Amino acid sequence: MPFRKIIMVFGRVTAFAICSCLLSGSLVIRAQQPKGGPPTAEQIVEGAILIAGNGYGRAVLNQIRRNGIERGRSTRMMQDGRSEEARYELRFVRGDKSEKDKVRLDNKTAQTEYSLIYGAGRIFGIINGSPFTPRAEASADFIAQQAHSIEALLRYKENESKLSSAGKDKHQGIDVYVIDLTDTANRKTRYFISAKTFRVLWLEYEETPPGATTPIKYTKRFYDYRIAQSTQVPYRTVLLEDGKQTLETRILTVTYGVKMEDSLFQNPEAASSAGNP
Image (cartoon, rainbow, N blue to C red):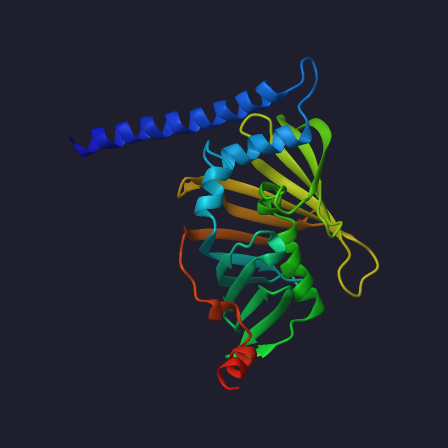
């Protein structure tokens, strides 16, 4: 078969798959929706989970996203107006709940290279092979990135989080479902889900940074959704603080199902002590 024809066939198949996913999400909502009433928060989120799994929902998400490596670049706006470019590598191994996850973020800028690691309920850092205790604001930011995320919504059941609906709204001509999530640590996140595609378009939350007295309103916007191993992933994320952009993240590659050694998530001092009783 000529190459051009192969591309045309692939394009048709991909378009059909995407349309099928969107139709599936709509059908789930309609099938469960009380007659004459609006869909519940759980019905809307279950539709979003279905779409995130490319039409197969949890069956695909739980099988494929057990662990993985995400590589990309980020641009952070500094307080003096300058921007700081960085390359990052995020590794994770999922537990039964998010609190049992293992997460490692390796960050490399022009000035420094360091790692932040979450495991066994605590956070520590590594720089030049030696562990260190991250600053309070760095630890809070690291936790917030996990707690206020799309994954937190997709895993609401296993995390025993509570959902509530804030109704349906229209933003810049786009109809969205507004969903509030409260986790077991009482952290609250508001999600805005497209009523057409059931993708999470953005989320909002408020937190008071360590040492501060006034809460900051954070907004995460998600763009450029693509298919990654049969799951839908936004490849570009923009973070705003009180309406001002402070961070932009772009995924370069993401690979799920990668086997990782436990040593990647261990404190070097603890690992050394275990090896030398």
